[in-house]
Image (cartoon, rainbow, N blue to C red):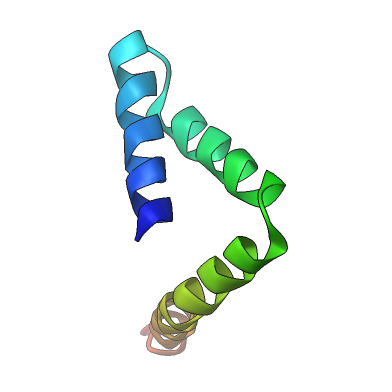
Length: 67
């Protein structure tokens, strides 16, 4: 939960400064990766089901493409 707040704060700060919001997300990722390994592993375990779901949607949409 704290990592989500960190990413949101970085996004808002970079948007306020006038820099792209994507750069804020990148900077938050750099901060998370430079922290303890436990935090990065916890985030990976939380994000993995979302990645799997989006991958299923992607490959499912390719399979249903009409000819």
